[in-house]
Length: 338
Image (tube, rainbow, N blue to C red; front, top):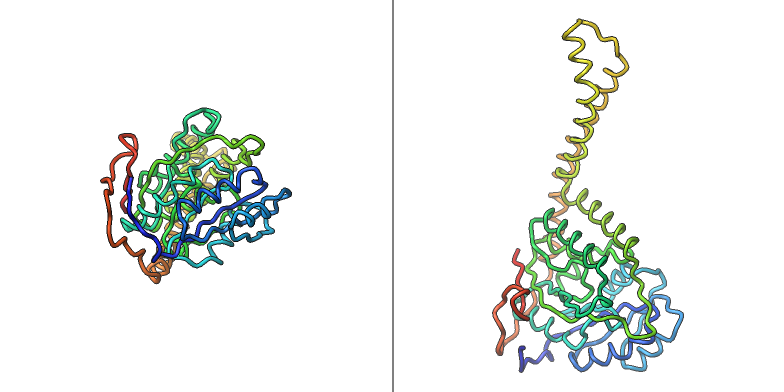
């Protein structure tokens, strides 16, 4: 563990989205205050029907309210409103190790990196159900395959960001798909990313999970499909064009063979349908190439927006920082370079 660092010269904002977290929010805020005593802790209450906001304010947090429901809407509002050098994002349900927030900040500034992900390490099945584990692996693997970089935990809700990352992040998602968008934004801009393992436990007694395995999985999968369509239009439209082309071949080849054999086209409607579907396939493919050219311009604009903001200032002194290694070997940071 790193010791002896002082963050007093760095403005740190901790963003805690909450919906009905009265049971856990005081403990989360207290642990964050102990870990990052100079940070400002913002609890964003998302239409809670319990005493979440009052308890958070009594614990010393700055409480703000977001009427539009959904974690994505909360983060969109927080990233727009809060100004800081470093941002920490953590759920208010006391499932993550809030006491390790300083380690995420320390790794971010030591790099310096633009994005540090807290990779969940759970000790019991109740904390992270097998369905969630399997879904996370599938979705994380899909994103890594599409964007060519390895990310261990795409759906983690415990992260640290630089100022320029936050101010270049569009935050288009409305609900729990926001973690997917945060990850893909890093992959898209190819920013320097690091990962560190953090503990993940089940909710305290009386807390209610907002996660729905199948519903959230479908939404996240749909989000990845949309991101693929927007970020990799040539790949996406090539696959769609290939499917249309395959249908055209299945319908058209027998007609062509029959014409070569007899000189007649008895199935004229089938021939017209096959030709039409083949033309649609070609148009879809051309559209993919056009969108790819437009996407390059959009990527350049996003990169320039990112570069408008200063890089995170590295720590002046690093004490006992372990070298980044693979997460499955020990508890130090793992670097995911651009």
